[in-house]
Length: 462
Image (tube, rainbow, N blue to C red):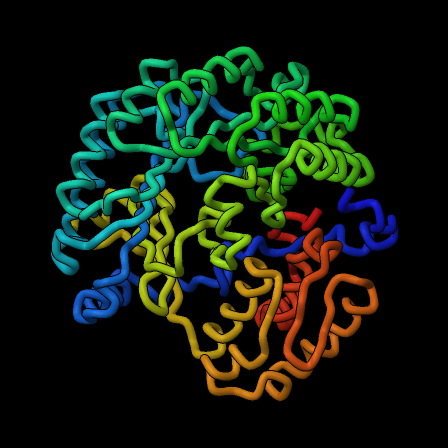
């Protein structure tokens, strides 16, 4: 078991908040000084660069609606049973797409599409057809593109899954979180195991390329004994991928979490036991530990990418896609174009207002400095490949690694003594034990964290 040699002292030492590094700098560093004009300029620079245009885009579309509230949720969502609101939202998405194609044209190749939320399956079948037609008219989805959608199992049946496949969506992710009935009641998300199992059978029959299951440990009423039953059920379902997240209780930031009874939350030792159980269960079931929060079967594209050193990380987590530009569409969506990050307005009212005035709805973002980009390369190498080659960083960024990162190297030596990394003249290697704490390794190179020690806004590493 991967945690068998990890001491309780080490677990306690690294049970602290830290970024997930789906980007660097992280989204909390975005500033309002970066706005729609800056983002439009980044799009124009891409359009004017033959090399950039030749690189496929990644598209993310945020569908914010959910029919019912899950108490643990920290996503940007709108709880409503008024399905007519979706039709209006699609019209505004069309306006946002049009503002992009004014700059980019309509032939931009796309190799990755992700529909997230909220619950994208809040949309009706006809609305999903309308959305996919909009995207296909304005972007060139490449043959074999990864087209994924997040699914609330309570909103689909076999017929709806077939519609998704017919629309070209080839990867699906089921939000499960936990199969224990008491836990489901505590978080206001009741969906029996039998319902999910039947849907997964349907999805396999239909022929989706990859099926993912999301799980959360640390939820109210969860115990190591109850969670081990969920782990066994998930292993029996055998999804191609598993995303395992630690619940971050931040009720001061996320209002729905105030409905959770704090006394029902498991203490840190229980959470660590559940994580240890999950690692043991999935590894023994034949899954590859991708890193931090992802597992995949050996034949899945994510596991293949890890073996071949092609793993990447973006705002959706670990990915097989190269470091391509990302266009985010919809309320609160985040994009990455060139050396910039951008984020749309977080409320529907502000999002609509920008588009009514003919403006891109970007309200904050960041233009990366050279130091940001060099550190991003270092952090992503650690998070994705688990190793760092000094010479590669020096050649790419024309710097002396040990001179530029002297303080970080001293801190790395401390992690080396704890068995998390191995350091030699050529670079840094994250150990098998270190993968368990890879966020802590990456955090040493986060210049913003070194200045700002307020980490309470982040989820905990364990």
